[in-house]
Length: 159
Image (cartoon, rainbow, N blue to C red; front, side, top):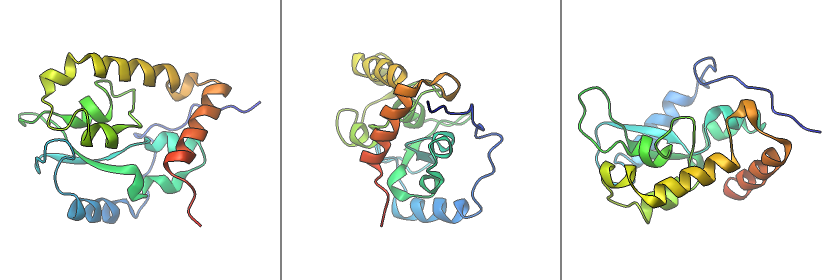
């Protein structure tokens, strides 16, 4: 029987020392939010959060461009639609959206925060994600197996 340890959070995880360079290179290639094109303020978002990468034994995904997407992020006083929160995390920072790239380029392309917040699609996606991939502290063996399978589909090991 396999178990995930309640793993380190991002607060206690030391970033890979190569992260600043990877982040800068990603922003040079993808300076604007994948949803709305805004270039400031943006964040390089990990599709599969770093703590899940570590818990699944895939630490290389922290630096893998396939696991990164640029999204706008509201900061104090910043006016943007915060696609990082609403599409990257489906409105809840304890959640994550493995379909963020597909959503950014498709059904949510150009969507405003108000539409996303009240969107039936968003609520369905959030419920689906939370049901499939709960917080690391409460993941079951079956959910872990499903998550590993999904991560391998999205980010196959490179040769």
